[in-house]
Image 1 (tube, helix red, strand yellow):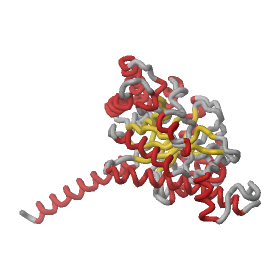
Image 2 (spheres, rainbow, N blue to C red; image 1 turned 180 degrees about the vertical axis):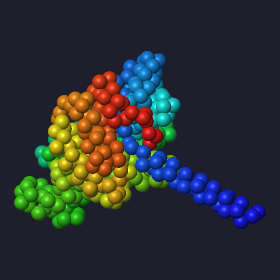
Image 3 (cartoon, rainbow, N blue to C red; image 1 turned 120 degrees about the horizontal axis):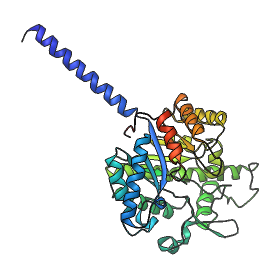
Image 4 (cartoon, helix red, strand yellow; image 1 turned 90 degrees about the vertical axis):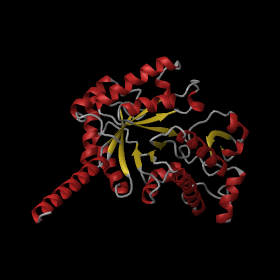
Length: 355
């Protein structure tokens, strides 16, 4: 082989390598375009639901969406009597979309089945009253969450999405005997002793201790997924303010990012005030960007705001300007034809990017 031939072949190899690098870069940098949906959006009848799922996902594909975060997708949750998640995955994958069942550790529960048999897993108030929420400081409760995730993994899902990964609002921690004893073992006294405000250092430690328990659960989920041998994305929907969330609900999502516990964070920035939206997106990107992808949560309609198609388009543009890796829309119930048409024409004109 002549020097010219060797040089020519070397040039082709270099060009091919560069092309592969460019393709890999484009894939890894694909913009997340997620929507939160719910199994309740579809009929209980399997045949009707299959048609509804196919029609909606075709509309989402035309809009340019690529990621589905689905609530109540497991059989024990939706009670449709057929494998809803399997159908959803099949239809989504046909359209280049990924499916991430939503697991909600801190959400209100039905007090039945295994939960009814284990009241010690539930939150108890200061007066002993029982709340229909898992105490995320309870090892038994955390183990139950992992069993839910194991059921989802059996379907070959693309990811697990954590929502309600927190205590109920207003520092509604648990004061059951086991939890109080665990805290006393570390700090020498019960959180029930002394003042229940930030003027008490023990109360401050109690707040931080509960946030650490939620972080322990997130860490356990990450380890569980790693041990499964499956390639699964772990994402989480979180409250807007990284400083207030650990104090109010035990959700220290900045630490989750810093410790590499999650792949994607979706701060729920549900507002129609674009100035406020920009400020919170900027802060979320600043906190999490080096450690996790940030998908800005945008609400069409929520308990906090009622947006317009133009407003949602503007917030997508702001999220991009501030360096977010994607967006997530709340929710499938309100992301109707007008919103989808505005997104398709104004910001997602080239169709879905695979995530």
